[in-house]
Image (cartoon, rainbow, N blue to C red):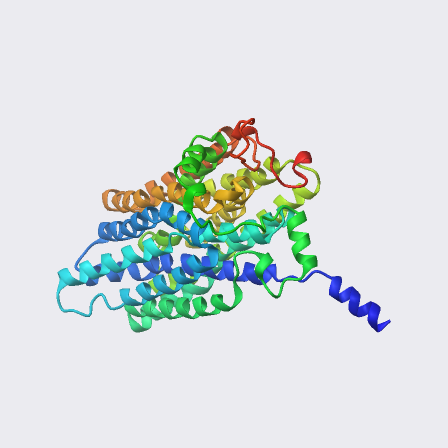
Length: 461
């Protein structure tokens, strides 16, 4: 009996993929927490450099310029050196620059302060660039297709979790110790997390000592890309794949959708607490706590959107229907933020924004779709292109919102702008992307928009 029990336990699959998922979650929480520093510390930060609200828009845009510039080389580095090396090195290095931002005012010269401030933030954006493509690679390698929606929903929830946890803490640090302490706190947290990642992560389950054969077989048979390796020559992930991805209707539709979706992300990450202070008269301390409520709803939305997607897949719906349904529902809910322009009560505004935030989380299936359709030889490159094109809108969004506030004196026009972008994201998935399936550019007889998925149960999706 003891032998039978021990054999059964041995044959039972381990669940180490969830530890990998936790590391992915933490990296995304840090990534978005660092960006949220602008929403809490930004106003006082630019004042210390003798600048105004428009300069805050340009400061955030500087981060995004660097973030976009780093996407293509970041994707190449991932496919060349693997996810673990790039992610761990990135988290440690960008956290160091986050820490340094707090010392921008160390020299008693306003021009030196401005140069250091913009320079450190540029480096933050540049080094954060490969984070989300790396995580897309981890999901593709460690999770079968039927679990990828929930896994993607869980990692998407990290950006909202970051706001729930970090915004109140940042508000308290800024209120009690000054804006600089916000960056010192986030920098130290990031460095500690990077050290933890070195002990936990591997690129694929095949090489991890704590993954048993049963778990590996479960992941492989379900469509996990467990054979994904760093390419020793970068020949397979260069210009040829870039051209093919950018001429694929499916890839372009998803990339364009992310362009509009990122407008929502930057509004909620960098401007929402400012909106509560500027238009709704809250203190920065109160805004930090209040802003965490809609973020909590966004977190719930992200988890439920992933659950719905995987449930639909398990019930026999096509992969396209399972991924697009949460996107359509979520973006329609996100558009509701425009109603805030016609409401006076601060608490009703928070309730509406909570609904919009829930919708944004519910419809945040982009990275899951990237894991579903990207060619296995270029998952990192595809994720880099997705993130690069998506974040191009992040360059202009902070500046557009800043000028709307300056010229009109309120956020009303900004909310309309963000709501329209949510609707356009929905349109890209419905009318441009077409059928979602694994692209296979190495099969010459098939057009890449009609390729077989390459995953075991693709035929009945």
